[in-house]
Image (spheres, rainbow, N blue to C red):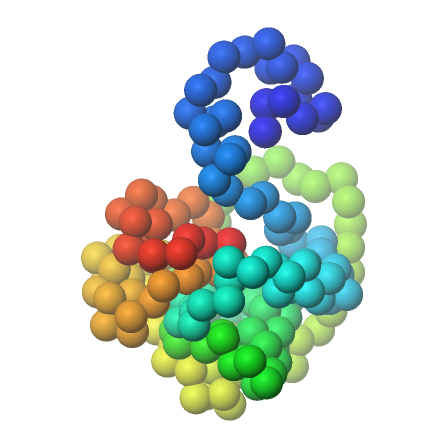
Amino acid sequence: LHKQKAYNCYVNESLPVAERLSKQIISLPMHSELESKEVDFICKIIQKFNWLRKKLNIVLFAYNFPHRKTHDFIHEIIRLSQSRDNFYKLSLILAADFIKIHSTKSIFKKEQDALNCSPKELAEKYSIPFKVVAHNSLQSISLIKKHKINFGIISGARILKKEIIQEIRYGIL
């Protein structure tokens, strides 16, 4: 990250851990202003990775309130799971309640699409286990183990702790 143009003030810094991790991690655009067509494009790129040709039991780290990115990811993962290859299964949704954070206000104003259902309603529609938990809790670890999760997707979460990440064999997007 520190070698990218936006962070050129750090280009001469020696950050060996960041450099090692950059060879192991894929960084994709993920932010609240993503359009549905951009999420679709990202998912299509992910499908092209041959290393993902494994049966994935997916946990979606989501919010427990209507949220565009969560909504789009649920629909897209379900669509992928119904494909002829059937490599993907949304096995669990871990939904965190709203937490007020102190952050700078965005200079960009984007109208949020009105969502006609909550993540819980979508989970019920598709028969996906839905649990309201703190993402970094022991309960999350227990649920990840119980559902044999091997891949995670963050559609709404802050920072996941090492203990959560280590439980997920193929990684977290």
